[in-house]
Length: 88
Image 1 (cartoon, rainbow, N blue to C red):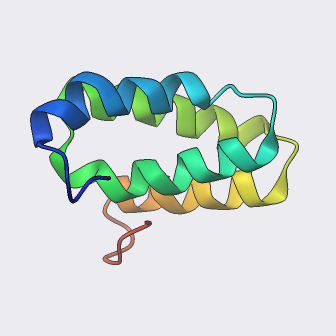
Image 2 (image 1 turned 45 degrees about the horizontal axis):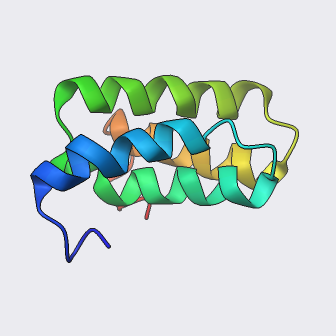
Image 3 (image 1 turned 90 degrees about the vertical axis):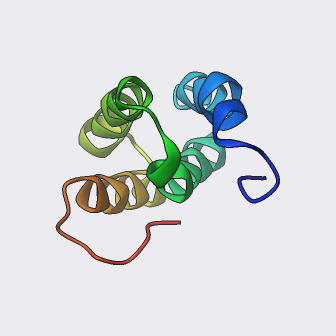
């Protein structure tokens, strides 16, 4: 979707839905949230980046699903500039 939506739509709507879905009870949803956040990092506003960071940190620190934790940590590394590759 990121390739077919404007940066404004991604920031106004898409990123907020991802933040909400970061607390979904289904592990596969949280796993995909982490991956999707990594795919939209370059177009996020500072506020939305921070909101995503909070969700990713929570998933990376306390999620019970290995894949969710892994991709949240991978995206956090990209956010911190420790990984030149895209997380998405």
